[in-house]
Image (cartoon, rainbow, N blue to C red; front, side):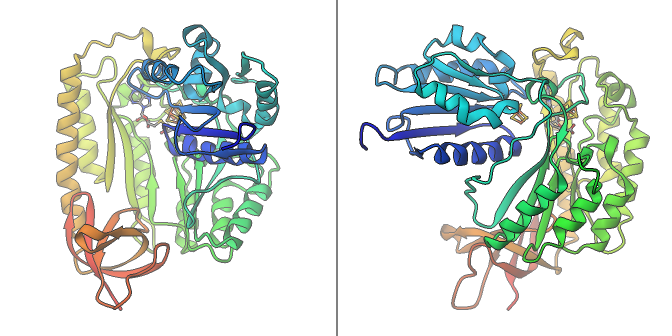
Length: 442
Ligand code: SAH
Ligand code: SF4
Ligand code: F3S
C-alpha cells in the first residue's frame, strides 16, 4: 500500500436497505478513487453503517467506536453513517471526537462532496438532511457482492410514524424513485447476468411513481418481464398499502416469487391502535385472505411481530397467538418491544418486565415452530425450483432457496455438482420447521 493511496474499510449493520446502501456507498467511494480493504488496520477511512431499530443500538455504536479509538494516531479518519448517525447527529462528535464525518442515509447523494471536504482536512463533516430531502440515492456505480441476486431500492424513508419506530426519524420522508429509472437499472442488471431482483423499501408497496407512469403492481409486473430475470422479490410490504392488484400481478407474472412479507406487529386491535398502525386485526386478515386466494400457486406468508408493547395484556398477547393459528405463516420474526429515542411510545409505560417479554416471545416462537413443522410437511413429495446459493462441503449438500424463500438443502446424483446461481428442480423428501430437504431431479 502506497502512502498516497486512498483506502477504506466499511462495516454494515441493520436491514437489507442498509446492506444495499452500503453497496452504493462502496461504489461511490470507488468512483472517488478509494479502494476497499478487508481490515481496519489497512484502511485510511473507516466507515460504520449503523442501525438503530432496537436494543439500545446507539450504546452499541459508542462502545464500538471506543474500540476503533485504539486505531487512532495512524492518520486514520472515522465516519459514522446510517440510522444511528442520523439519530445522534453531532452528539457523536462530542462523545467520539476522533470521528470526522456523521451522515444519515438521506444525504448519501452528497457523498462525493462530503468526501472532498474530509480529504481537505475538515474534521466535522455532516450530512444530516433528515426529513428535508425529496431526493433518492441513485448511482450507476453500485458495487454488488452477490453475482446472481441484485437489490434495487425503489422507495426510501417512511411517513407512517408507528408509535414504537425510529425509521421515520432516521431515514427521512417517504420518497419514491422514478419507475423508468428502476426499469433501466433492472435491464442493466439483467444484461450483467443477474437473474434475481429484490425490490426494496421500508414499505415497498407504498411506492408512488413520481412520474405517475406505473403503480407498484405495474412496476412489479414490468420488472418481472425484463428478459433474463427469473425471480423478483419485494420487501417489506405494509398492510395499509396492500392492494388486490398486487396478488393479481403475482398470478399473472410467473417470475414474481411466491412470497409476501406482511408485518402485522400484533393480533390485538387495541394494541394496533396504540401502535398507530392504522388497521384492525380484521382489516389485516382481509389482506391475508386476498393473498390466500391467489389462483395459480400458494403464496408463502411471513410477518414481523412485537411482543410486550406498552400496555399489552395477557389477553392482547393471546390475540397475537390466535392470529398465528388463523393465518398459518411460513415464518415469523418476533421481537421484544424496546423503547427507542424520539418515538411516541417512549412516554407510554413500558411496564412488562424483560423476563415477561422474553417468556411471551418464547411462547410465540414455540407455537410458530409447530405451525411451520405442519406447513412444511405438506411439501414432502413436491418438486420445487431452487436457486443454488452454495455448497455445504461437510454434509455434501447443496444449499439454495425456493421461490417461497425457504432454505432448501439437497443432494445430487450426477457427476458435477450444480453451479452457484443455477436453478435446479428438487424433490422434497424431508422437512424441518425452518428448511426443506431433498434430492435434485435430473
Ligand atoms: N416498515 C416495516 C417494518 C420495518 S422495521 C413495517 O412497517 O412493517 C422491522 C421490524 O422491526 C418491524 O416490523 C418491527 O417488528 C420491528 N421493530 C421496529 N421497531 C421496534 C421496536 N422499537 N421494538 C421492537 N421491535 C421493533
Ligand atoms: Fe417503522 Fe411503521 Fe414506518 Fe414500518 S411503517 S418503518 S414500523 S414507522
Ligand atoms: Fe435499522 Fe435503519 Fe434499517 S434503523 S432496520 S438500518 S432502516
